[in-house]
Length: 175
Image (cartoon, rainbow, N blue to C red; front, side):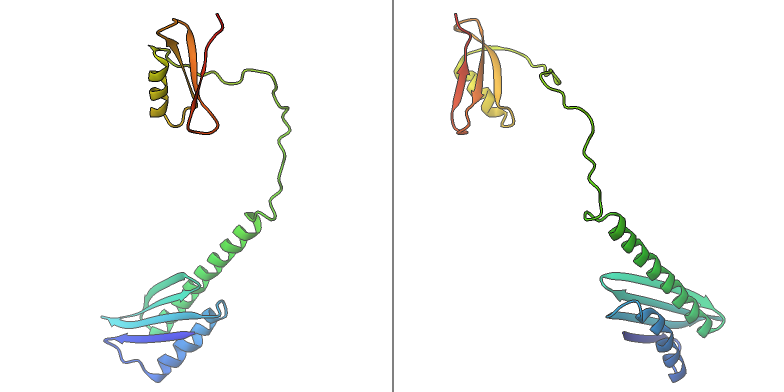
């Protein structure tokens, strides 16, 4: 584990340095390659320890204050270890329960409806020329057909897109 220890308004002694490194071994066992930034500072009578751990794209942070610097460091390590265990457990649970490999596929047991009208759409039929109907259909790229009243014959016609995607067909009723 890469460790960077910084002291603000506090001299980092060899004893504090060794203590932090020894305590961070508890965090290091969870990761192969982790980095820790430790900032130790004093404000009035409080000793504040702030530890950031970055590993596997995850960031963990703990800040505590106590009258004793060593106690503050211990609290941070406990907090970080709890955060790491919680994240690890959460990921393992997601992998175990949410995995596509382990999901059972349940086929729906409902019977298929056949030869029934299952959807009704309503639309307005306007009188127009077949050429105008093609232009109107081109304005709506998601639609495949357009029903209209042919001005020339007075009967309902349908203009539809052909499979080639370039041309159109006209459906007229027989006389």
